[in-house]
Image (cartoon, rainbow, N blue to C red):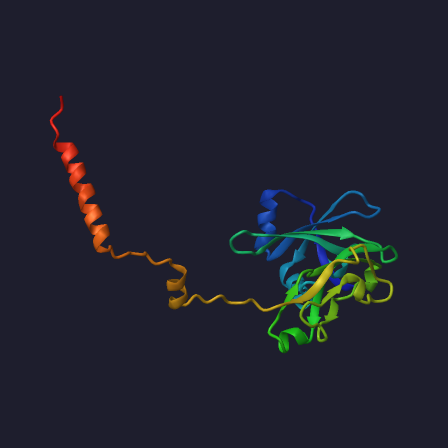
Length: 237
């Protein structure tokens, strides 16, 4: 990826009150870490310029060439990547940025989005579903070799087929520490709907069996009731 130039201003005064002033200037407070210069460098970034770049490179690991200015005077410049953004919990407005100094001649580890290409045969012809398991791939490469994305063609996938990390061809100079057997995408069978009809419900319920007593059974029952009644009426001694 080509470096993107970004002018930033040094922050000589830091603290909660000064941060509020930075926000009122429509800027974002930031800090640059790492590199041969061990001490962090507090800076402020023009909000509109930064967000414009990030919108056009959404989801990508952007490599910036920061021009650190003090007014109109350029103090220094170096290559950085974004390590973290902090957003307000309610408004989601960008509140702070952490940059990390890098060297263009040293490899680094970053995350790259994985996108699918085409419609899987098992989805198109057999009603299956595409199961996208891994959305980002951890890669190792030089900053200038960071790909915008990793594209995976799923057109030939039938139901039960999968694409593993070992199946994809990474760009030259790019490698990954991911498990080669890990599944990126697969096609799973369609869900079966189980319909229970009213007739089925009636068949599942065991009907109560009521037997019609025969004449003999009726007489026997009557005799038993009479005997029980007689036992109850006997005077106790």
